Amino acid sequence: MTTHDTSHTAHQNQESGLPVDLPTGSPATPVTPQATAQTGEVVAGKEPTGIGSFSTPRRGEQAKGVHSSPRISAKHLEKIAASLSVRDWSILGAAGVYRFVTARQLTLMFFHDHASDASAARTARRVLSRLRSLRVLGVVERRIGGIRAGSEGMVYYLDTAGERLHRNATGSATRKRFEEPSARFMDHTLAIANLAAGLHHHGRVSGAEIVSLTPEPRRSYTAPHGGTGRLAPDLAVELAARPGAETISAFFIEIDLGHESLPTLINKAMAYEQYRASGEDQRQYGGFPRIVWVMDSPKSATTQRRIEALSRALEEHPQIPHHLHTIITTKDAAAYLVKEASNE
Image 1 (cartoon, rainbow, N blue to C red):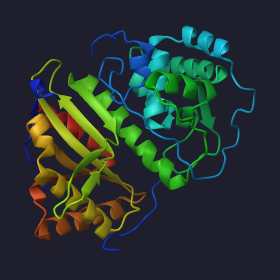
Image 2: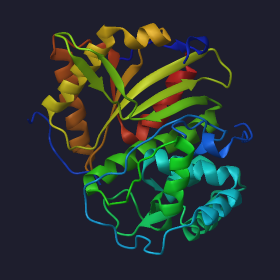
Image 3: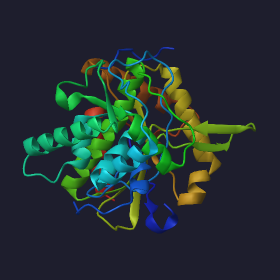
Image 4: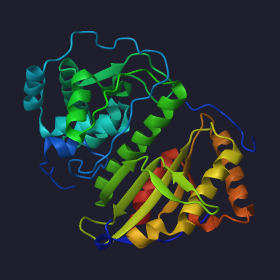
């Protein structure tokens, strides 16, 4: 399918028709702990600078290995906060926003200024181990799905100290107790973080700037027949071909790992069309983001069949302008998005 060029400019404020299968720079910019802990953005070559907040999933069985030591006193929490580096705060912020992140993803995001990949991995293991000892991060010990393997595949979340520090930084009054989610939820959440990590890598390689990455941004609009419509893309992405460039390429990302039926995906596409027709994004930013469907499943043949089925359904739907939609595999998504931004 084709893509639709609706770039933003910097000064503008920035059922089952589908086969179903289960899924398998510049130097760092100093930032305050508050800014980093609230991060909803990931910027190539920089520390995170955006804002985002998410609730910990309520469903699922309690994870093995969750810390059971006594509560942390306010004084002890202050000492922990004072001991954290800018990078530590960035890691805390990423875990707070993405909810679950692997060691490999964190390494791609925050440990790229090393002589070799091996050196970066060693440093990451040491830093993450220290953050675990401080109870800033915890580890999900029961491994689920196929995207995690070895020490680089360890899945991290905010532990007691990290959750309190993140709450303090974001101004949230709601305490979130950790409960391990389902395999399906975790795989989907990690796929979002994985795309963000891939954008870090490809952005640094190409010299592109990641202006913002915002997981699950909330959008509301007036529905065609009254009432309020709501939309939450898996990830909102803003990229520039180079740091400081005025033209910004914007994308709404939907990630499908083989769980959703074709009618469900088409309903999502209709929600995007209704939101586009409302003109909310156009009034605020001067254009509407491209809609990119990122698809995957354990078998490449299944993925391809699902891509073809969704493509046909979008083309045949009388109310959906299919040229606004792009469908791509997860392994190609990050490089594709960066390339598209660089071509504008």
